Length: 230
Length: 215
Image (spheres, rainbow over the protein chains, first blue to last red):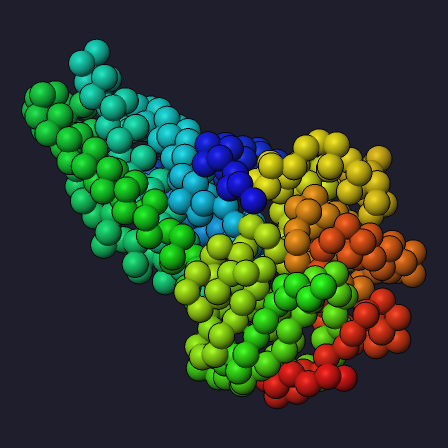
């Protein structure tokens, strides 16, 4: 029997995950308010416009990473709740295509989340961005969320089906996404011009984000199938 | 003409959670058979079915399914078998039709295949537009069976397939399995509903403490 083309599997999994989100609205009704609350709570806690403008980049990415845990848990809960993940294994399809489909769906959800978080930063923290900064910011969001999408899907697959996965996932994922947190924060600060940072300083950090995304994209494609199988 | 062996296990040991769930199983199943696995809970029936589907590693012995050696490459067999376990493998937030179309895309089946399978299992029409989460247990089982039909598997592996189905559903399932057998497929199923299962099966095997014997 011929194996189903990889592109068809990627598209089927991507469409399925996005359709389920569109119907259940977990990201819209739960994750988004959760991330928004983080931004508001920090605004109350710091209560200083200068400080908030300086740390806005870090707060956006902290809220993104906290939200990532919830979205990844949800993404794999829909696959494990009725053993659909087992059915995917038995379907004899290329599991790296499942990885890519799920990672792209996760990335798109994170991008939508970041658009709202950045808008919240403009509103709550009064940050400003130049045209060049906007280009840097958009590139940073795409590269960082792609990396988070890959690493989140890989670790989501690793912990899917394990007992205590709700607590295990953040424990395993947090140290791994630390480079994204640092690089994306620095690039976003450069885009906002926080603390007098020049926009050009941010591109080196975007380079690091690209490398991170590439490493986890390739590594995840190779490792996801064997991880799910074990 | 010699019979074609679809499953051939010799002294197979399968370790699951550090426990030998199958301890030296030797049995074979020929093409076109409908084989019933009987046995008490925890005897190893589910483990045997999952091993046949290439989901569990073989710790010892030789295991061949559809000509694939499971000891060396258990992934190769997967695209040729259909497994229905205790769970249904469905996405609760999708409708019946969306589930069917998802699985059909993965296995390269046509829309016509989907429609035929849904009609065969009595889930076409309004039920097809219903979210799986809103279905009864029996309707979900029918949906899972329909997605299995779409796969046109050479070996059907079913764990308690009658569970949750009403009398009409059970009759439809039996007809579907006989039709699959008539079209060249082989069926292995585990069931505790011995009377109905025996009338469907062409042969029975008894699984006890990880060993397999003729029933």
